[in-house]
Image 1 (cartoon, one colour):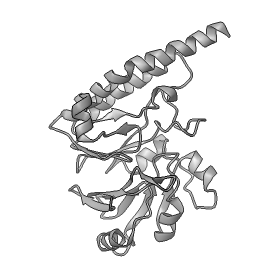
Image 2: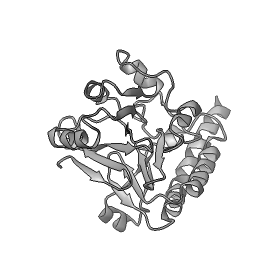
Image 3: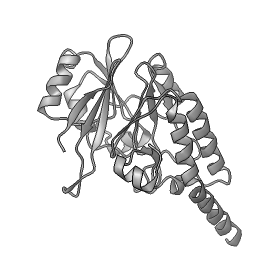
Length: 261
């Protein structure tokens, strides 16, 4: 799969990149470039793109001079942070607490991407949402459900790493799945409190309403899904419906362990 830059309109470009597990299976990854109303740019997540995309990005951003920040929205996506920091040394680097712990030598901004203060920084152009009820940074590095979702209202595009996935169209048809699904580790990511699943469900309902105008979902390791008019909200709630039994199962199991312990 060749990496490529997709122009999704109104100042939003999505980079479909390569990520190989154990050097073999290419599960893909992504980054997005957003033109702000100021005329400057931010990257959503880091990716070390190759020569052709470097050329295209240079043309868009005055050889990188207009890139003001890189917003790293998934705490476990750290592989390309050093590369993009070296290519855009003037850009401010934002990330999570884990980014700072894993790569302490980079010049991270003190504000973390999961904070309300961070969301205010780009409120004129972007909307951010942190899922309630699940851990943003799990103690288990295999659990990747937590991330900050970024919505660009001007283009109606949503950038999301892992929290939502997009299954291949044929797989969705065969399994009768909605256009988007929640990450398989979502239930395991529930915070250890009785009302965590309820909080997660409430968050999903709020997002389905607030971001119902989403036109395109760009997901990290799976692909892109185009939404019909007002279709994102329905798709998100359908995805929630599919995992509610697992959320309830994990909640019951944890409650049982507490009672027996």
